[in-house]
Every structure is written in structure tokens, then in C-alpha cells.
Length: 250
Image (spheres, rainbow, N blue to C red):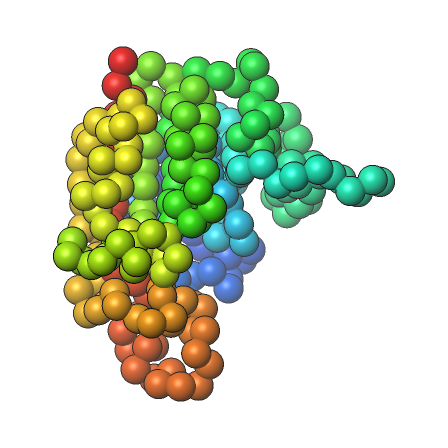
């Protein structure tokens, strides 16, 4: 895929062989355009919340780490098993092995163990398709407070989240189906010391009905129903998504 009018270093990352299995999602997730909308630049301190399988990590880390600092944040994973490296250690080891950067260019930590020297230093915190997990696990208050403490005074939070219709019932928008109402997300951030700076329809998909009984996982890439109506769901593509940028309110 050609990435015209994109920072050359980011374009090189997007086309790197380590992303060979990721590029099929680029047309739905629009990484270059989304990061530009969020105002992310390679010299920044950037936090990725809940990196999961690492789809965006494989874009962010090699682009950010050479000039800035990439940080991975997730919620408390519970006690560490004896003689086993914790999540943060495993994450750093995997990233360094993949991209051959120094370990001091990447930091990983859980939201209840934020290093004191990082508080107030993040230029951007990016939350990709993870807010429903916060809601479903009843940890949104704690996580957003932690995220706010990480941000510099002029820091911002970029959010991409599966979007439900505004008239969807609470039973469908409590996080259990993956979809949230955009107005609820805005209110949630406002309650935690943020203000909405800008919105984008970059990651919208108007043909997603957002009312699937099995939730967002009905659609690609999960296709949780297997072969049942598979062609229909492949034709729809990935979910309809809100793309929101929030400013830390002082």
C-alpha cells in the first residue's frame, strides 16, 4: 500500500515486513491519517493504552522510539507468578527483540504502578478500541484518572472506539458488546477532567449496523460466528468507529 503525503519514516514503518500480516487492516484503521489527526509526532512521549496484540504497537514503537519515548500502559494484571517475568518485562523484551532498539527507549507499566518520573510527561495517550473493556470491567474511573496523571499540561488523549447508535439501549452500550455511544464517551471524559477538542469520521463505517447479538466481534477481524454469514460480515468490514481527540483541562 502506498502512503503518499505521509512522514517518510512513518511510511517506512507502515511498509515494514514485520507488519506484513497487519496491512490488511490498514484500510479500516487508517493509521497514518489517524495519527496525524491526533497530532502525534515522532519526537513525542506517547503512551499506548492496552496494546493487546500489538497492531498499533508495531506502528508506534518503531516510529516514536528513535526520537521520543514509547510507553505502554495497561490496567492492573494482578500478582506476578513466581519465577515468571511480569507483563511489563515481557512486553519490553518482545518489542526490543523485534526492532533492535535499546530497552531505554521503551517503557511499560500498569496503571497502579506508574513510575514517578513519568507522571506529567506524556504528550499523547492513545486508546484504540479499549474503552469498552474499561467499562465492562468497571475500571474506567481508575484508568482515566491514571491517564490524566500521565499527561503533560498540554497533553491530549486520542480515542478510537466502536460506536453504537445514540438511541441504542444501555444493555447494548455497557461495554459487553464492544460498542459505546459517542455522547457517553464524551461525558465520561468530561467527568474526568478533559474537554473534547475535535472529532473525525476517519474510521467511520456507515454500513455497520452496530446491533449484532454477538457484539462487535461478529465482524472482522474476529468473525466470532465462524462460517455463519461469513461473506456478509466480510463485506461489511470492521466496525463503525468514533475518532475523538480530548484535551486535558486544567
